Length: 285
Image: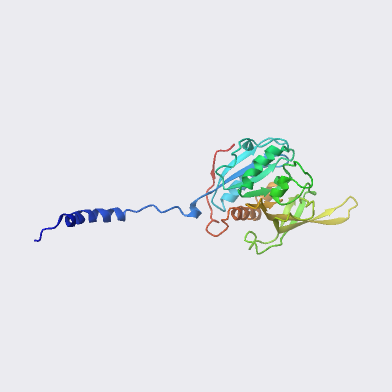
């Protein structure tokens, strides 16, 4: 039998070991669809049942997409209390998107408003719901404010609580595609003070509400109720003025719409991200 040279002998010994090493299963990188979207819900203030709506929103959205929540809930029921989450300059650190559902019209300090908006100016996506439009009435109100630039719509009031006929005006949008028009339960139709969205915004749906004046004459109010905005040339913002009553917030049509808007804002509105996912609550404040 021929004598093996040292390097050949080493190869015979090491090859099985190398093959065994290579055969070990190496964990694959987690698929992007398996990574939860880290969302912050800022909610609370005047005039709404936020104690229930915080759960309706987070559970409803997490049943439709892989979203992990931190809830910053302010129990104060006035328009003057700043949500404590904003007291930290790094309040938005670590989140992929912020859902603004607060009702804080009388929080007007420019430094505070700038602190709230700075992460969005830096590109953090946002979702703004219902009374979030009527918050932070600071410098320039009622004409042009920094908050209006963020939301994309100048609005400062609403009509009576009556059903709203919601009609999607852009049925080709990836957010509204396949969604059917619907009629809400009693809801508040927010006005569009200038009659149109800001130039940075794009309408997706309008709402009509038949209202009787004091003489009994019927009039139809017609306003934009769903839209998108680009803030500071960086942040994608989805917004809707719908969502006053619990019956609307828990409506599957509403939750479908807000979920799709949230996914759009973070660039993940596709079939692989529209999956049922168990809600995981982070530390609640």
